[in-house]
Image 1: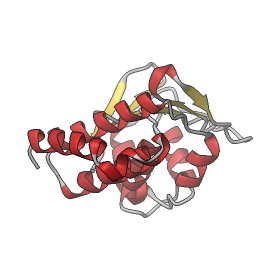
Image 2 (image 1 turned 180 degrees about the horizontal axis):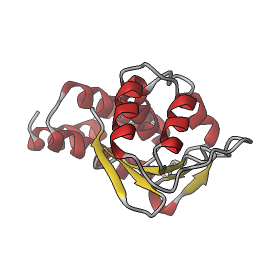
Image 3 (image 1 turned 135 degrees about the horizontal axis):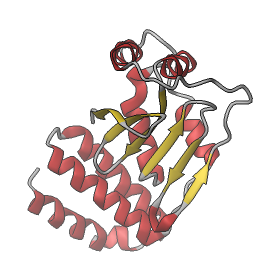
Image 4 (image 1 turned 30 degrees about the vertical axis):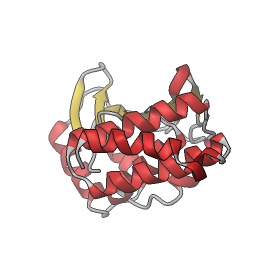
Length: 193
């Protein structure tokens, strides 16, 4: 799918006589579905980035905001790290442009367009994050989690033992960056699309 073809398709879609009769929210739902479907069919980073940008622009135009229950519903389908890429697609469609998760209590700050921000509650019990990070142990634990060998709570415990304080996901870059308690980048991963 070439960039020019996609841009042409966007204009044709929005001006189609059947689509013009739709309400704004209906147009958005149909268009976001098409963008995600096209995104699943391509592996080129520039095309995925374009689709993400178009989705965010539409969410901004329609002023769509997401809720914590919507995010929790999407997260409920995550059983292991192997499910993470699908979870990213699900919350991106909701309008999440980035989020920051803190290991000590698992609370997450979610960010949307137009400076929209919402935070989830953390767990009642907290974890102690080690002061010194163990990068090699973390990489091993992360790999195990991504292969589906550990659940999410175990992954959080492994992060705390390895000195990982938080991670930040940026949707348009499709990256997940892990940080230690000193604010140093420990690992930057590209999220598979």
